[in-house]
Each structure stands twice: as structure tokens, then as C-alpha cells.
Length: 464
Ligand code: 5AD
Ligand code: SF4
Image (cartoon, rainbow, N blue to C red; front, side):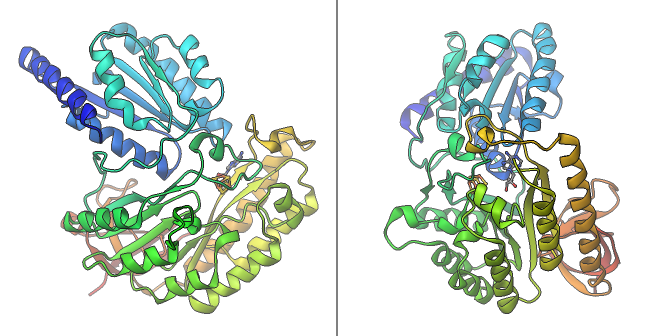
């Protein structure tokens, strides 16, 4: 963080303290975070800044003095959610003109989008993108100084920012960025356009951050990158993902290392071996396949074939027979035929995924796929999605049934969302387990015997 930013934060904090003195209440803020874990992590940083400005968190929009939208544009649905929610805020701002509204994140990096918000939502005070998140203190300071609306979108990334404050959601698990941006340009995907080119953090900075997290009580970390497998290659000093995992595996007190996401084209035998030999890297591979048709994979610019993907699965099973494997799949990519789709169903049956995130293709302006012929109707695509999901849930159910009566290690995350009386947590393979237990177990890793396997959750009782 720059010295200037500390000045901005302190100035705002002083003004907020004065406000508290005069009114007897602290200013409150709320962030709506859309999309992936990268955005969740960015929101933790934004909250870090806000905490230093003297803001308190709230979940109630009507009492918020500042509402921030951290947006996503991966699919059209994510975008329309933001726009309709933003529309609702207009009424709140009419009631409370002092409310500050900010919009940031991936959607703002899209060509023309910031201008659209600028003109269609004049009640938005601050607009910025993914490349200038760290300038947030300056924009806020300017708003506090009465300098009017702050709108800035940078076309290009500004390297890697270290030392930003952060307000982490959980005391026992943490998201850790390792590489920003993406160089892969899958033809359907907007991410490379809104998150810029790959930039790796230095290994020493990551290791230091993780050591600090562990000292603060964190037992599980999730390393984040659009393609963690290419971590370090841009540094050109021999750093790579396998080496980083080996280093992190040595950290005493750390119990679990997760990572997201792994591109199949860069998954090597060396890496699978490293993961198998490590004591903390989890037995879970999230390996997005996107399609089971080599023809479609080529159109998607994924740079592997169905056969290569299946070989990778064999490799994983050779070294880690019990590893859970999950994936992402897009159905209805432009020109996908029924035969192509059936290849995807065939692959799903061959691999036997533990779980999958499945999506209907969504056209993203500016990507190569947006210019491809797309004769299949949305209804037909939705029908394919349903058939795929049916196949996937049968498989997940079979896999989970095998866990019946076994004992699994669960990191307890909190009360269950569906039943406050119960606790929920995750296995090393990332399966959700619900069981009865004392809330004092939250944050601990405990053994649980599975008593009832369902398709998407496991129910159990504390072992011992
Ligand atoms: N349409 C549908 N799904 C998409 N994804 C990325 N771009 C699109 C798109 N245009 C999916 C991919 C990716 C996941 C994060 O989102 O499956 O792995
Ligand atoms: Fe998008 Fe492909 Fe990059 Fe993933 S690897 S973020 S799908 S372009």
C-alpha cells in the first residue's frame, strides 16, 4: 500500500469518527459480491479498506451508509442480477441521499459498461474496475471531499499489489491469491479481457502470507488463480506450482491446502505426484473439462482432446485412487450437435465425477465464440443441461453411497444453513457433511461417521 493511501484512509477515518461523535452511530457498509472466489477475495480487501476507514459491516441494506457491488460478467445471468439489484437501490438513495453507492469488479472492465452505468444510474457515486481496486481509498477520499462522482477504469493491469489490508470472512480458512489474470483465451470466456494477463505473486510473498495466516489460526487455505498450473512461469526464475505446493506443505500448523482452478492442458505427472506425496494438499481435483467432444474442445480453444483428458483422469487415479474429481461443463456451445453432447455424457459416465458445475453457454460480447454460428435453440440447450444433470446426479449418488459407515475428517465451518441446530463442514475431498455437535467445534477438524449419504450432502455423527 502507498503512503498516500494511508493518508486517505486516516482522513476518512477521522471524518467518520466525527460523524459518530455527533450522531452516536457508526457508519455501516455492505458489499454484494457476485461470481467466483477471486471476487470474494477482492471483497475481503475492500472490506479491509473499509474497516480502516472506520466502517462497520451490516447485512441490512436500508441501514447501510455505503453499498458496494463487486460484479461478475462470466454469464449474462450474473450481469442481469447486478443491474436489477442496482435499480432497486435507487429508491433507497432517494430516501437517504447521503448513501454512497459503488460498483466495481469484472463487469466494469467490459467495453462500454462503465459508461452505461454512468448514464443509466446517476445515483452511483464510485465506479472502478479490477485493475484499480487498490485505488479505492483515493476514490472514497475524493467523494468525502465533495469532488463528485468518481469513475475510473484502467485498460491495463498495474502489476501485483502486495500489503493491502484485508478483512477475512472466516478465522480458520482463507483464500490466497497466487496468480492473477489469464492467458488462455478460451473462445467463450470473458475473463482474459476483464482480468488481464497472467501475473504471479512471488513465492516468498505467498509463503509469508500463509505463515501469518496460520499464526492467526487458519488451518485451511485455498490458493486462487484462473489457472494455478501456470503459477510462477511468468516470473521466469524457476518458480512453479509444484514447487510452491512443496514449500507450503512444510508449514507447521497448516492442515489443508486447496487450489482453484487447474487447467487440464497444464496438469503434469510431476504435479500429480507432488500432490499425491504431499501431506496437506487435499485429495480433490477440480479439473474443468467444459465438453466431452474433441471437436467442440478445439472450437473452444481448450488445447486438449477428450482422450487426453481421460488419460489425465487415469493418471490421477494411478497416484490417488480415492481422490474426488469435480469439473465445469458448458452445454450448448455454438454449433454443439446432439452427437457432441452425447460425447459429453459419455465422458461424464467414464470419469464418474463427484460433482460438476454445469452451465448453458452464454454469449459474451467481444469473445470469438460470440461470432460463431449458433443454430440450437435455448430450449434445446436447457433440455441438454437437464439430461446432463440427471446423469451427473446418478453418479454422485453412487459415489456418496460408498461413503456410508466410513469415517471422514471434517473441517467444521458453522451452523448448517438448513438447520441451525446442526453443524456443517467439509471433507478433504470438499464434500459437505451435516452432523450434530457443539458450536465450540467450529474451526476444528473432527472425525465424523457417515450415516446417510445423499446426492449432494452427507449426514453423519461425531466419531469416537
Ligand atoms: N457461458 C457459460 N459458461 C461459461 N463459463 C465461462 N464462460 C462461460 C460462458 N460464456 C463457465 C466455465 C468456467 C466456469 C467458471 O464458468 O465452465 O469453467
Ligand atoms: Fe476463462 Fe479459459 Fe481462462 Fe478459465 S482458462 S478463465 S475458462 S479463458
